[in-house]
Length: 107
Image (cartoon, rainbow, N blue to C red):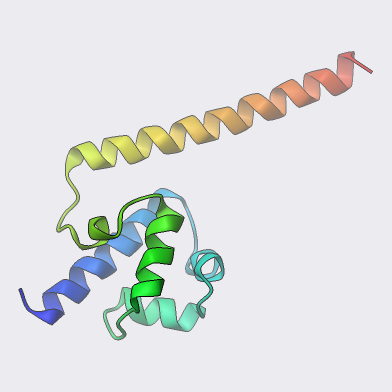
């Protein structure tokens, strides 16, 4: 595998995991402590990342570092990520609903 291909895989996976969370480049860049321009360069393959940035990305996405380099995420990974995202969204909605009910009926 050549460096260009590795950069492409990393770029696609960062965009993929960022998209699953509906995060903008600005939000992800803030979360991992880099500039938005640098993140854009990483996502276009113009810049490379340090090992620390890779660790921050993986932690932010709740995955292992090696998963950032897996070509074309398997459908099972996509399903898992989608279900986790839905569970999170449903939990927030449920929690907000309970808080609203509590405020309205329990004082």
